[in-house]
Length: 83
Image (cartoon, rainbow, N blue to C red):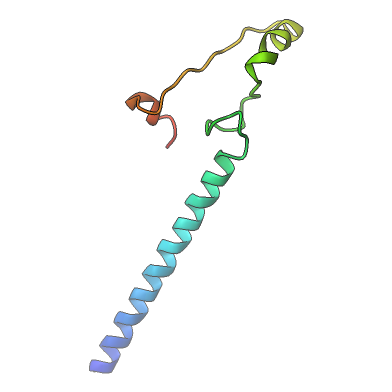
């Protein structure tokens, strides 16, 4: 009985380690994907990010306004945008 309990406990520990490491892999993959575009600065690739130097010319070409996103790392509301 003691052997069975210790085996079950060891199996539970290994199972939980496997789950937590796979969750860590998912988070790492998400962070890698999030920062794959250096212009996006972690805000995702669903927006066509353009360098400021090219923004005015591009906006005039497509006849659309420019959205200027300003955020700071110390800003509590800005930190909420990442996760």
